[in-house]
Image (tube, rainbow, N blue to C red; front, side, top):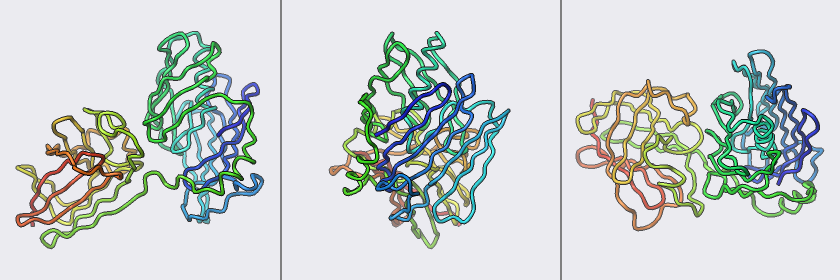
Length: 354
């Protein structure tokens, strides 16, 4: 739930978040004359009293205060994390920032961007910039008909948005996206009262918790650190995860494989070391990609750092897997790597090289 006001080149309001701890986000955004963001501020406040900073009950170190200031050719980020004694400061070269959003995007800021397109008289605004506290990617917004726009990028799936003549959002349906949202217009909502009621019921929690699998295959250690998204009633492959596109093979930060010794898959040798894992799901087979870049945000992987592409076999599971799972098992000759989600399992065997 989000309530906000737009006054000239300023946007401010409150939003009720149910991800992580239930909390109220108090935000203010100020824009340059061209519509790009001059300053962005978001603070996590207590759901029972939005004048008091949130004290996390669950212990997650998510940012309770985020500020971005863009001047000249640089955007500077000031991030205060729960449990951290010092503020994180990052600088990013960027001539302009158009959107700030990650796990908790603001639909009012999305509406601001749609209104910019309507005011421009163009059919599209391309090569816009979005950030998630320091990682910059491209987004776009365009008209698909007189009253419909499409807005999206790495952190927000492209979805049709029904708009009025000024570009204000009338409705949009994000069912099936990672955040499963439906947006409609309402009269102003008392977010504080709503938050007090909602805080009494369990929140969503962390939608894609991080996990680490550790296995010893023929006395050689293998470790995979990855995000584990849930199915949550969605059709996964061919829908949430498109066919024939590079997938991060998990959620959030890159899925990272650490090998104590090299492995052989078919005729391909993967030396010992650390790799990010990507996949390209297809209807009848998958590709598993090993990449030496383990730090780039994985929705925009550095394809020049790929060292191998391995075909994976697929089969249909008799029981759907609610949460994405990576499994490594030892066999008589080596090991088997399995990727399981929904009704699909992709797998390959491998040998240890010493």
